[in-house]
Amino acid sequence: MSLKNVTQLFSIDDKTVCIIGCGALGTNAAVHLTGAGVKKLWLCDFDTVSLSNLNRQFLFTKTDGGFFKCKVLKERLAHYSVDTEYIPCVKKIMSPDDLSFAKECDIILCCVDNAVGRRAVAEFSAKEKIPSVFGGVDGFYGTAYLYLPDKSPCPECAGIINDISVRSSVSSSAGIIGAMEVNLALRYLLTGDVDSSGKIFIFDGNLWDTLPIRPSSQCKICKTPEVKV
Image (cartoon, rainbow, N blue to C red; front, side):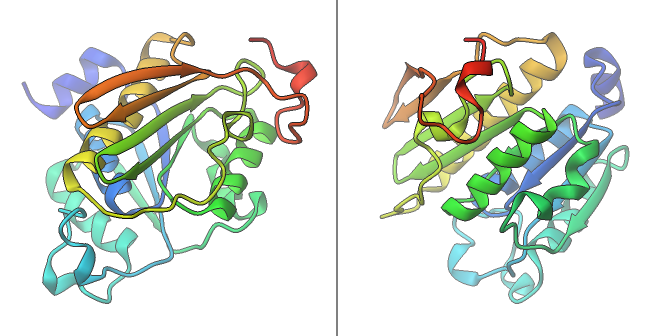
């Protein structure tokens, strides 16, 4: 079955998705979103390809060293599917205002490991009422979380805003969590599934578990009293 037929089968060719961070998680997520046949895919990252990261950022090669990740990723994905429009965005996300370009998106995938970028995505998502998915990995451990504004506790409530202290980087874990982020996004876009939101999906070694999240009365992002859990 061709990518075009798959697109027609799942009716995903009218969706616009944004990936924040084109590293290990972002490159994996981009492949699956392209395979699903999304209409438009924003690729946002301010960094360049580093040779030391090639073990887990498999779409890059040693000849890409020093080039912007988002631009290289666009070229790689364009060879995979010509049906998707790829838009590279060289930008460091420091505040919600930096995400103004994502207002057209149906969902955002946050694939960065720093608190500043994560908080910016969470606040933008809450303000614009745009769903978002957050992922993180460390060694053989990883998490994924679907946030639906006004329907589930935000990433601040879930305790996943803080910087991720990565002790080791395992390519397979990045692949699993990147795919899980896309799985959560596609299930919501295609079926309206809200049951997967408001709980952290935890991958630990070779086991999966879920942790339901309760809204925090101290949260300044999602305005807890308005959240319907």
